[in-house]
Each structure stands twice: as structure tokens, then as C-alpha cells.
Amino acid sequence: MKVRVLGCSGAIAKDCRTTSFLIDDNILIDAGTGVGDLTLDEMRKIDHVFLTHSHLDHIAALPLMLDAVASLRQTPVQIHALPHTLEALSQHVFNNIIWPDFSSIPSAANPFMRFHPLHVGEQRATAGVIVEALPAVHTVPAVGYAVRGKDRKEWWVFSGDTERNPAFWERVNELPVAMLVMETAFSERESALARRSLHLSPQSLLAELHLFRQRGCPVYITHTKPAETDVIMGEIGEFLAAEEANFAGATPPFIIQWLRAGQQFAL
Image 1 (tube, rainbow, N blue to C red):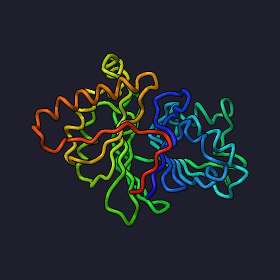
Image 2 (image 1 turned 30 degrees about the vertical axis):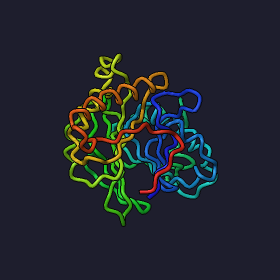
Image 3 (image 1 turned 135 degrees about the horizontal axis):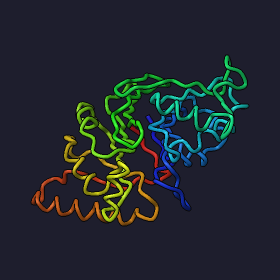
Image 4 (image 1 turned 90 degrees about the vertical axis):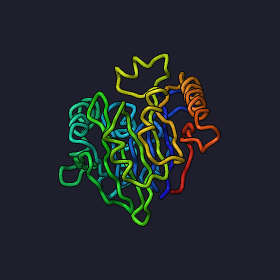
């Protein structure tokens, strides 16, 4: 299974794209502005989109992508998400006011997209991979995702947008994890805002990681605000170094890196 990072920023700026991951060639996890870096042919191949939640930075490119490739496809793009997320898309985006309702054009029988409600804990086997919706704790109903190839045992795990989330770790600790992608949207100087908006900051991130039992698994940080990225990663490094000092030379509990758009992983 291939994972290509199209976008992993919490906002836009030069070289910063919002959240979207391409699994192999035909599955998107979220549809942030990073989708815009794909060619028309690459977008045409996307058959399934799994959305974590309804916030703009995770859905921004979906209407435009559908418009770009509709005439190039013979089958609808399948949109998988929580019922609340699909309802939000229908009411506030694909409502024939903000954007055409692609779930009913060119006809209800043969639309450009179809909605598929998804629930926490549900697994979908599609296009050579298995996708499981994981619990998330956010200001709107949200999920994270675990994805693995059908012939593989290890999972790629993405927290989605979330704050403290014991249920997430309860499930993740049952999975063999090859790579963990965790959001950390705010620095410690904005930790109050992080708590209010149900995002993580460096200290709450490390507190969450202490619930993760698979030591040595690579952890990648996503969803940092462009103006805060260096501060966030610096704070994570400081807090982690202080923790590692207590291990007296033992294997560090976590290998934490910043995720970058354009990175590709083979799992």
C-alpha cells in the first residue's frame, strides 16, 4: 500500500496544503487543498473519498475536484463519511447555492458522486485496502482512520482532528501499527485555544502518546498551523528530550517527525 501526503497543514500559505492523503492511486483520506496538486489524470483515478469531518480544511477541494473530473469519468465518486458530515455537505456545499448538487446531476440515477454513511468502528473493504473509522473527539462529529492493504497485517493510522481521546487508543492498541499520524494544531502558548477547539498541543499530544503501547513506532505530526510549525516542533522536541532523559539511555519511547506535503510511504 502506498500513502502519498498531498496536504498536512492546518491552514494555507506558500507550500502549505490542508489535509489530504492519497492511498495507492484511487482513495483519498480527506480532500483538503493538497488535492489541487494532482494532475487531471491523477484526480480522474480517485474512486473513493473518506472524510474525517465537515470542516472546510478537510473538504475544500472536493467540490472543485468533482467538477474537474466529472466529464472524464464513467462512474460516480464514492464519498464515505459520518452521516452528520454527509448531511453538512448536502446542506451547506452541494446545495445548488454554494455548489451544484453533484449527487443528482447529470441525473439521480447516474450522478457524479454518491454518499455512503459510515459509522465509528465500521470497516470497509474497497479497492484493495481495508479502511476502519476510528473515534475522534472534535467540535463536530468526526473520525480518524486506520488503513491497511488486504494482504498486509500492519496499519497506517491517522487520528483526524481530535483532542484527548481514550477510545481511539483503546482500538489502536489492538492493531499492529506501521505508522501513526497525529494532529497537533497549536503550540503551548495557544493551549487554551487548542482545548477550546478540541485540538492537541505538544503537551497533550505527549500525554496521548503515553496511551500508545507500541513503542518505537514512527509518529508523524500533522495539521500544524503554518505560523506555528517551528514552535510546535521545537516544543515537542524539548518535552520529548526531558522525558527521554528519564530513560537513562534506554530506547526512546517515541520517534516523532514532522509530516511534509509530498512525502510518500510504502507500507
